[in-house]
Image (cartoon, rainbow, N blue to C red):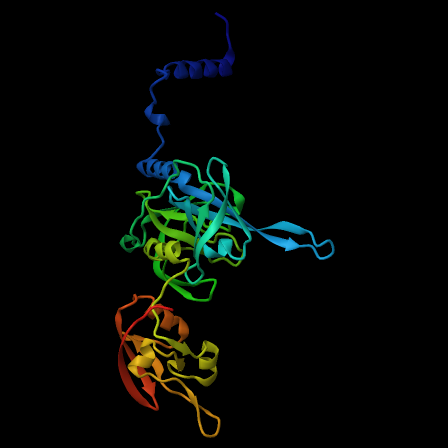
Length: 357
């Protein structure tokens, strides 16, 4: 018998062991089955949702100083998702498309289409675009309910961070009811906080639950370096479903009005006024009809305040943002209760809201 030595014996033993593990080609042995239920869920959601996620790029036209030739210069990029497959409507963030002269939308299969703006809501950092000559069989995302979210629930973000298309990150809901500033310096309330990695380029992409339903629109990160630091924010889908139909129908958010001009927040801070003073009322609008009065000049040229709004429907109002947020909770024709102070006395008004003319 030929001798192979110690290492030869070991090699022969290994070969014998592997030969005993041979299986049929159509069988998967248990030790190779590493997919957990959670992994299977993540994979399934991504496969179904990713065709609905798009890459949004914007550019601006700029005239050269000396030649006067017009050049198209890239402005920014972000993500978005198909809102209406038949109309080719896409939802994204306002800050992704702000100031753009030209817009392009690239699908998962790398087809690219020109797009136009349908509506903008800088106060909610949302925008609706329409693809020009969209293809057939686009994929829409099913809508969830952000009020059903709770801290610890699994969420997934799909987008194009740093231009890397169709990237998936997974995390949990870290907190609810956060507040962030919109591009117009308005406060966006009820925001979802997540630790799913969100980086530049993820803006406008969907945040999904484990059922593959849209629960938010990724919009911002909190990071000194500009990269993901485990704190990302998403606009809740309940806000999106309220705003997007208005953007499609009117091109902007339609809010009811009192018919007043208010003092600026800078003026409020300077003179330390409690509430928001009415500078003037507009003729024929609810505030004037209810008997509210604006500021006027005194006999010596000083400013004499009229009504100063302090509450709307029991909610305290101390600045313009809070006033607008309170108004946005209502629709044209709703009746609200307004509390003001005038010359040191409290006044109460019941006002039916009207629409902007």
